[in-house]
Length: 359
Ligand code: NAD
Image (cartoon, rainbow, N blue to C red; front, top):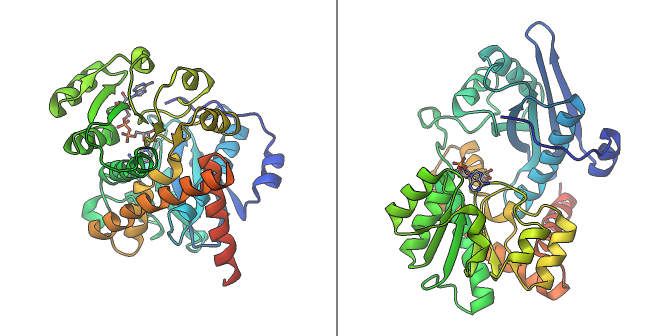
């Protein structure tokens, strides 16, 4: 997988702006490990975050990525109501050809040196098997296979959270949160998309599905009685809710102009291509955006539950909170006339400030 295109903000500028607690450069020449661990904020608890392995084009790009992702995790944990902070680890290298047991175990030793301030988890380029290697050197790791007390696939919880966030937005727009008769376009029929389609069809919603992988799209459409549609034609259709479950950045100036829907609620991370501009554009068009970092927190909630000894029942009950949390975010956004992602951030910041007072 290629590394993502990074904004060109200088690293020290970002450090000043983001106010990270700790950044560790993990280097071991003997085995060729180059990694960075960023602990953004531990006000609410230990910083949790994925271990991402990508062939970054430059070290600056890797640092930029780790700083942004770890800050985003702080907000995600805070708005989700769990006692965790935000962190991230990135390993510079090709996850297909350069990922080895020794690289992962050495990273585990660096994680161990942080004494529980950072808890490693899965991200792009790492798997449960990799977490097993990290576990050989530290107990501060989650995302383990089920056989080792881990949660296994988190997609069902993520989809459930998205479904609940969607229902909260539906309640705001239509006065009832029933999905019967609503029309939803699910873009991306992967692990989360498929579970979401199942939930929607169970609730008698009409569903369109699109995917760049036509076989996958047709498989999901046939299995659940949804209507397949080519990706490029998606916004020509009339539907009530757009559910981006593939990639980030699909809510942008161009797509917003074409949108006729009333709600956006999906699992993809960073759906708004430009938070400030697109947030305002959505408000102007009266489209409710259920913030991605709130409603896709099922994976984080699984990880949280794993720390105390994994329980699917506990994860499910934590996930149910997403409905009320989304209602609160929408209410605040309307009251203060601010975009929903901003209202979610303010709620998260307020929680950190309040809890910070008693720490
Ligand atoms: P996945 O890889 O299983 O599925 C993604 C699907 O999107 C694939 O079927 C792929 O073919 C399709 N796709 C890719 N590019 C596309 C495009 N341009 N247009 C339409 N379809 C496209 O991933 P997933 O686990 O289902 O996750 C979906 C999204 O949700 C990702 O953005 C992921 O980061 C995010 N997310 C997932 C979880 C989780 O628990 N799995 C948690 C939080 C966020």
